[in-house]
Length: 458
Image (cartoon, rainbow, N blue to C red; front, side):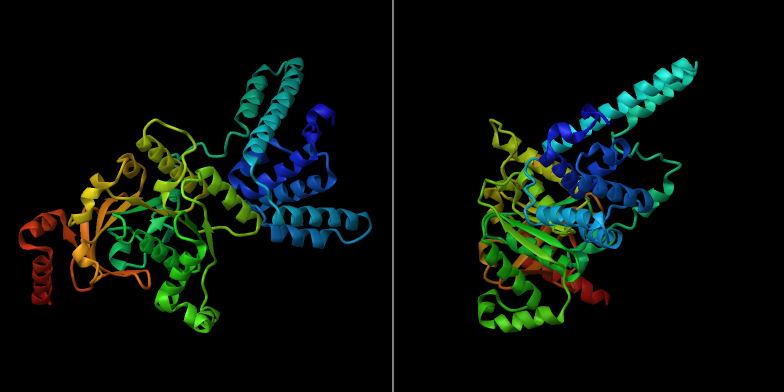
């Protein structure tokens, strides 16, 4: 193969980053399967890894993890020159796992895909010449059409009548439940926050947004799911203590004094894995989070839920004159991240001043950018008047819900010492009509009347 048809023109470091990109971005790897061959690599250990990586996908329709690649290497490379190759492969994999340095992979992926597409088109032109020489003129069009379509993504869309099985299979949503059965009910969230969806909790300062996010992450851990929790205000240890409190039931103020009890509890119970990562306020963008997630992927950590506390204080990748436009872009980028990685994302949004004394916080109370609500799949709000904070009472309002009912209200109790939120049992969900009535009768009187309705019907 000539120098021009070879990754060697980019150098060894670039070639190593191509394989890193294959390992961390499987959607991109699917595109590369169509246009790339292991022979494009100059380095022998990268040729070997790419050949096994693509070969595994073509056979099993899935990509191998790094641990599985190591197992394949140990089984295949056992003697002679193979031992030298095995040492090179293991050294390379160990190096990228311990020091991924993923900052420039976006550039590498763009250049590598462009290079491979050009090689496919060049080969198509050569095949077209041969077809013309053999007077197979109709074949020329097919050759070029096939070449142009390669590397553009494998999905052509959902063909309605033929792909009906896939459509009905999606009824079985793969969700991260909230743990609150009133919300997880089939006619409300239909199981919880599903893959590729964004959930936003809206509340004024100090009402319980961060506690809600910890509660969502802790519920996912109980169900054996891996969670990444990004924090832009609290420290990593402070967030960790809140998880300790939620999972063990010990007050956050008593966690440090009960170290052994906490460790024993984790030893006796199985949970998913949790990564808590702190970034200073206003410094992390979607690129920052994406790079961190790809770095974790190199260490065999694949999240099932991403929690972001909170998106309003992330940095936009573009600067606008208006803050609301930057916030809308942040939420749009989060939505893209959730869909590309097929992971649910819970985050929070600050409510405006008017929400502080409101019975119910609605979409109109989302500060700065109503466009945030347009991007989200689920928007819930938490409202607590100052007089209710001492009792822990409050309300959850389902302001937006693509999966089922919205415009419904639930009375709740918030335990900030354990970051737990629960709906007050034996009370029915309330509609906006009930909310308006509460302005005349008082929320407390309304709840009493609701309770009487329920007990009289039992």
